[in-house]
Length: 150
Picture 1 (cartoon, helix red, strand yellow):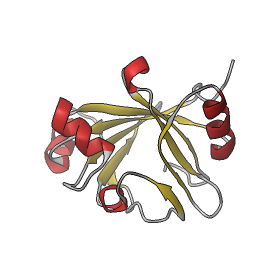
Picture 2 (cartoon, rainbow, N blue to C red):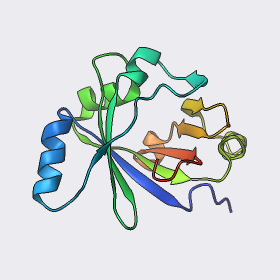
Picture 3 (cartoon, helix red, strand yellow):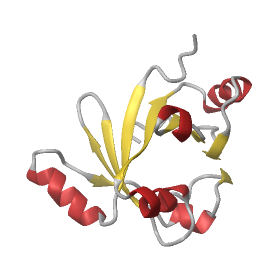
Picture 4 (cartoon, rainbow, N blue to C red):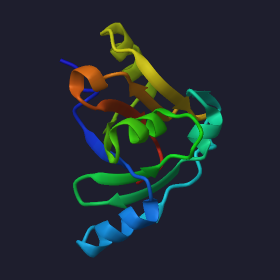
């Protein structure tokens, strides 16, 4: 049994209008929200379109037990844009925290999971999206970071 999907970190919801979505969540008592920094700190980046990846807007809300993320993709190509255009707004991925991004990815690949996107910072923290939507109903992601709350 692996522990790479044992520590839930966040749920990411793709939306058409991030300001409207944030206002709605705040109106029902979910907040506060903060902007996530631009996605430019990755020295290794394997995504369908770097422009599409770096142009996405993210906002996060750190609840006591899980982080919620809102994502508004740009018009540039990205899996998030494809999801929004084909399925509409909704949960795009569920993120799990791991201590070592490279180890979690290697184990997942050994178990037969295909990688959809990945990124690593200089210190080897980062993310891996797995192509799990067909089997799991949602994209699963592992992430390792040394930045609290990120």
